[in-house]
Image (cartoon, rainbow, N blue to C red; front, side):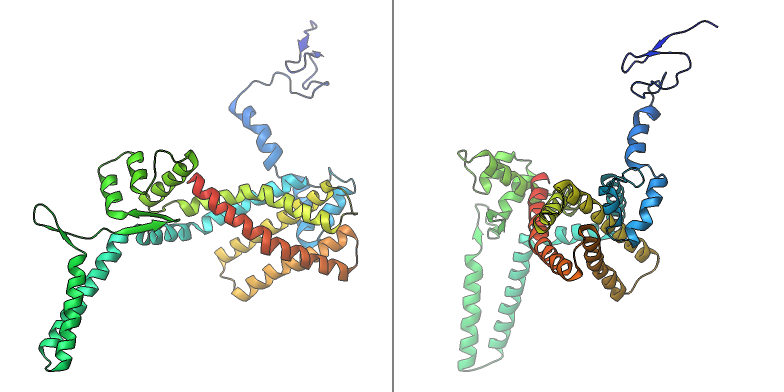
Length: 364
């Protein structure tokens, strides 16, 4: 048998016919590129469910702080990597959350379509009510005598004059309704003019001028104006979905903030990386618990009291996790958990949601 020499295409290491994997870099020999090879490593590295996952799943749910303690203590191959566990749990949660809120998204879009940009309908209804009041007043004045009749006739006359002022006669002798004013995010505009420009397929520059923009305005101001126009023309459809799509991205900022707060509360208890490990596992627990709650409610409608109890239990899970991970007394840990929850839920999360609404509007 001839000695056929091979060279690793990745690191140029000299191979023998008996090598299936390169002993220098570990790449598989004769690994031809295919769709399976292209995506196999990515899927296996980030979404694989092996023994480590099953070894980590139950302890994460019933042993608060155990996995983080084990991982920081050096047992890093026995259990699933904290970032990988968080990624898996977040993907499952946001998928289930998206499916469970689909009807809410559609309802939100329908309500927004009906309520946004209907300035003309509102004014028309107001005018219809005013005309009805005028007719009632005139009818009552006709059926009454004396001073009361004169008073009611005067009211009807004043109402008629107000109605006349809100209408004008064009060159063809037809009555035109008054301009319908609208506003959004501080932008005031003539709704009739904008609707006319939209039907005429006018340029964006013409529409911007209709809402008060000038050529000298900066690019950011014009960008905001374009977003307002787009939002109004689309009646806000899809905005709520854009907001939900930004939530997973925001978690990449919320987790480091959570770890930073832990660093402040436990400044002498490990490096920032240790707090990040704890945060990844805790948020993975939150996502898994929420996913199980969504699935259970989808199958069986759980009473709201039980849902509330499960949500409240996550606070005590955090207390026990901090106690086990940072090894402090229960009283001190309880107060630190209260401070952490208060700052995070009352300041960090609301501010983040406001920023998400702004980002969603920019990306809409």
